[in-house]
Image (cartoon, rainbow over all chains, first blue to last red; front, side, top):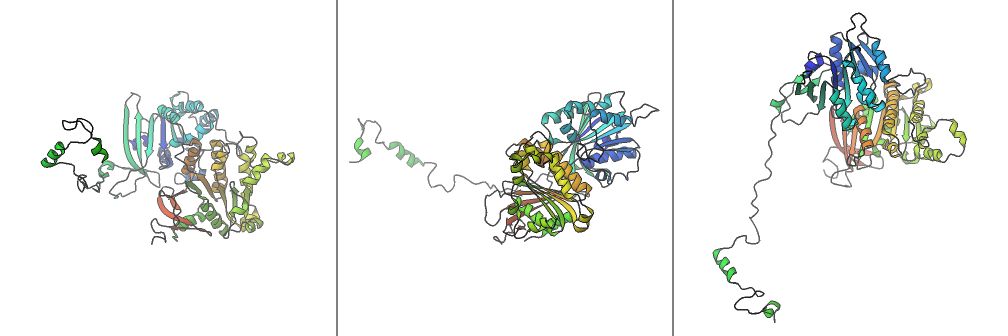
Amino acid sequence: MLSEVITGSEGGEGFVLIKDCVQCGGRGLLKSFIKAALLRNETVHVFEFEISQEEMYSGLTDGTSSSLVFHNGYTDPLNWISNEKPFDFSIQSIKSQIDQSKDKESEAKNVILVLDSLSWLLHHIPITDVCQLLQEPKRKESTVKRIIALMHSELHDQGIVGSVSHMANTVVTLSPIPEFTTVNWEVDPYAIGETVQRKKSGKVNREEECYTVQKDFSLIIHHDLHNRKQAIPKPDNTAQVDPAANLTFNLRLSEEERHAKERLSLPFTFSEKNQKMDWESIVGS
Amino acid sequence: SFSAPNSIISLLHNLSNCVLLSESKTDGSFLIHHFLSFFLKGTCKVCFLGLVQSFSHYSTVGINMLQAREKGQLVFFEGLRNSLDMLLPESDASDAEPQPLSFLRWPSTDLRNLFDFVNSSLSQSENDMSRWASPVLLIDDLSVLLSLGVNPTAVLDFIHYCRMAVCSKQQGNMVTLVHNEDDLGDEDCDLVLHALTHQSSLILQVHGLNTGYCRDVHGQDKFQLKRDHTHVFQYKVHDKGVSFFAPGTSSAVL
C-alpha cells in the first residue's frame, strides 16, 4: 500500500502526512515521494526548513531538473543574517510562490507541495494558518494537487498531532523494527510504516509494512514481515519449585498428632476440669 | 582503555557533524573536556560557550585554554561572568552594543544576539583559514538556557542557526550538551532533546549505572551513529581524561 501511495496510483490527491519518531526519521521516505514525483515529471515545490539545499538534493537530483522548485527556508527563515534575502514563510507567501507555477493552459492542478517539516511550521506560525494551507488540495482554485508533509510526533502535543492527522487523506506512521530472532535479511529493514488511507467513499484502508529506502530513494518493501517474526522461546528459568518442600515445620498433621492436639486442654480455656482460669499453670508457680 | 570510541570521534574530523551529548543521572561534562581537548589538539578554531563553569574550571593539565585563547584558536564565552555583567551593569554604555545574554534583561526576546556572537567568533578570515582547521562550536550546556526561562522554540531557533552557520556553511562541527531527565516530565526539556536527536548525526548518551555508584566504573555511555550502529561502553573519569571500555571489562573486574 505504501508503494501505491508513493507512486500516486491510489488517488494521488490530497494531503499525505508522514509521522516519524526519534528512532526512525522519515526524511528518507519523504525523499522517496519526491523522487517518484520527479520521475513522473510532476512539478514539485519543496519548502525546506530543516536541512540545507545540498543535503536535500543529495541523491535526489543534480539540481538541473526544472520540475523541482526549492524554497530555502533553512538558511535564514527569521531574518537574522543581514546580507541574506529574508524568507517569508507566511501562508500567503507560500501560496503566492506556488501560484507562480500555475499551468496557464490547462488550469489543472499540477503542483505537489512538500513541507519539510510541518513541525517547523507548527512551531512558528499559528496552527489555524497551517490548517488553512493543508486544505489547499481541496480548493478548486488552488494549483496544489497534493501535499506531502513530514511531522516529528514527539515535538507536539498529542492534540495537535491528532488534529493534523485528522486532516490527512493518508497518514504514514513510522515505528522502529521490533527484535527478531532470525537476522537473515538481504537488505536491512529500516522501519515499520503503518499506512492509513481514508478514501472519498469513507472506507478506511490500513496496512503495516516493513520498508527500507535505498540510496537512490527507491523503496523496498519487506513482504514477509510476519513470517520472519518468530516467537522468541521463553527460556524456562523458573523451574517448578515446590514451596512446601524443605520446611522447618509440618504443614499437615498425622492422625495421632491430630488426636493429641484435640485432647490437649489449653490452660486459659474453660472446661469441665477447669471451673475457673487456672492462673498458676499459665504463670507458673 | 578501548580505542573504539576515539575512532568514532575521529570521524568528526572528516565530516561536518552535529553531535548531541545527553547526560542522565550523572555528570556528562567530562565529555565536553574530552571534545575540547580533541578539537584543540586537532588545530580547529573553537568557540566554546561555557555557560555553567568558569574559565579556570575547564583548564586542566591536558587543555591549555589560556594558550589557545592567546593565539586566537579559542574563543571562550564565560556565561557566569557575563550574566552578572548583564544583571548588574556598571554603566549604561554597554546598552549600545548588543549583548549575547541580553535575554536575561529582556526575557521575551530570542537568542539572536547569542547567535551573532557565535557567528562572528567563528567566521573565518583569510588569515584564520590558513591557520586553523574547520570551526567547532561547543556548548556546555543548553539546558541551562531553559532553566533561565528561555522559550524552547527560541532555543531550537538558536541551535538551527548555529547548525546552519557552523555545520552547513563552514563544514564544521557542533557539540551540544543537554540534560535528559525523561522521568521528570519536563515538556520543554523533552522537546529540545527530541528535536536535537532528530538533527544530530552522532548521539552520545551518558547514564549513571543502574546499580548506583561504583568506584571503578563511573557510568555507561551509549554512542549512536545516527541509527546505523549503537555502541555501548562503560567509562571511568580520571584526572587527565576518561577511559572507555566494553561493558564488564573494567580493569577492576578483569
